[in-house]
Image (cartoon, rainbow over all chains, first blue to last red; front, side):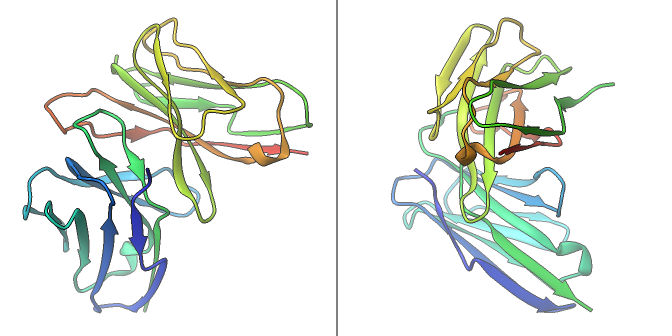
Length: 110
Length: 115
């Protein structure tokens, strides 16, 4: 069952912040975040394994709330290089396969 | 070269024809996956494999067949292609590792058009 991501798209000016949400109707074991540039393959950003844990990648961080069955990705002081489509991937049963959301397209403008 | 490679990168075929997309990885990763990517649907899992000779269905397996006779190869076959199978197909692999640390590395993708 695919997780639900919101918003579908966001447009930012350089230096602005954004939040991308990922929620599930089933209990989550872990949440992955990937970024895909246009015409390229998705690339791993970070994984969150515990409730409330936060991780960071450059000025991109994420949180994972087990009780609410959701994760949020925070883009802080966005840069042009942050443009792309962000996917959350969820693991429900400590399994090795991931179900991905529909993605959030982020456009950062100068 | 080390990594995960897909072939062909682009393919145009006709309805009813058989098509095979190849995936090869050089890391000896245990786990391999096939996803399709369509606008509005993100990445949807077609089939996956935990090891040679072990495969299982994902979210959208209908119309597809896979095999894994060798750890490094995981071909995906469309036995009778339909227009709804026009998509970008991504192969991925994972070493598994610690619990929950199943980070996926994706191939460059195969863009398939069925006319």
